[in-house]
Length: 101
Image (cartoon, rainbow, N blue to C red; front, side, top):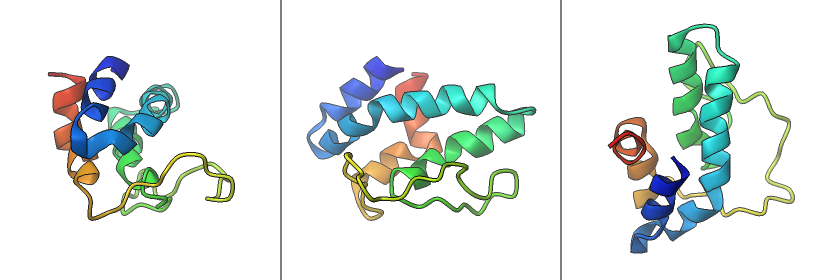
C-alpha cells in the first residue's frame, strides 16, 4: 500500500500526501485490528479522509469520533484542505483504486 501512496504523492497536485503515507498505512491496519465487524472496519477506514483534514468527528454511527487525544498543537504534517484535490483522491472510492488497483 505504501508504494501506491508514494506513487500518488509523486503526482504534482498530491505532494502533501507524502507526509501522511505512514499514518494512512497505520490507520488501515489499526482499522482492521481493532474492529469486530466488517462494517466497523469500513467506518474506521473511511474516517481517514476526515482525519487528514483535522476533522475528528464523523457522521458515522459505528465510529462517530477519533479515539486519540491529539490536537493540532505540534502537528508536523500539513493538514489537507477540504477543497483540494487530495480529498477527492483520499475518498474511499478514489483511494481504493490506488490501494487495490
